[in-house]
Amino acid sequence: MEDAPTSEAKPAQLRRQRMLDLIRLEEFVGVAELGERFGVSQVTARTDLDALARRGLVRRIRGGAMSRIAAGHERAFEETELRYHAEKEIIGRAAANLVTDGETVILDVGTTTTEAARALAARTSLAGVTVITSALNIALELEPTIPRLTVVVLGGTLRPLQHSLVDPLAALPLAHVNAHTLLLGCNGVDPVAGVTNVNLPEADVKRRLLAASRRRIVLADGSKLGTVHLARLCRLDEVDAVVTGPSADPGVVDDLRQRGVDVLVAT
Image (tube, rainbow, N blue to C red; front, side):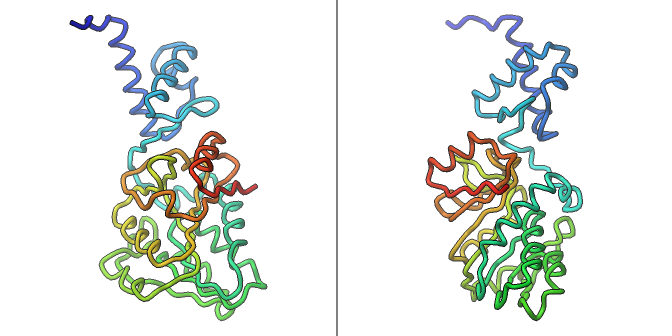
């Protein structure tokens, strides 16, 4: 018969569960903040975070921890646009530089893919490129490039939260598309869980974008690496590359590369 938990073990378990709930809610929490909120020393807070990390529930980073399994709260485009903004610009430029004259490119919805659209527009020497998108804001970003670039907008039902078009009707044109390159947005890239997204309606469209493309490139700022969300988009062996930024956890980057993923850390 197993020994009953000690009186000290129970509070530690409860405290760690509450810490985990807080980390999932706020995405990142620092050691000092955890110590203050839970009335423990920073040494104890680090021990708690290490225990959660060993269970695969959080990702330890300098000064605190991030959740590996996100809470699933979807934030509006305007709210997330400024988070990691400089890094998203770097990623967007790196992704846009992978596009060559004459390509058909699918640009997915999202703040980082929006930066890729802006970078494509800035490449004034680029010619003969057709861009297909399910994001109204991306179409507007590219409107000044017409007729140098051709912009095709998928139909569907408008989701104001992301300015995106989803089913019904969003995916009908994709049955007739064979694009050279997809620049895919997401909410998580994990070595085990693959590429994931927080929103189910958009996830369904993203899967069809993947099926309509020959080269699949995932754009994800560093905060998304090692994170898992509700809807699985694809396995890692179903993408050709992941473009991320300097905030990416080197350990996660190495793990992805060991699994055969081509990871470009843009700087």
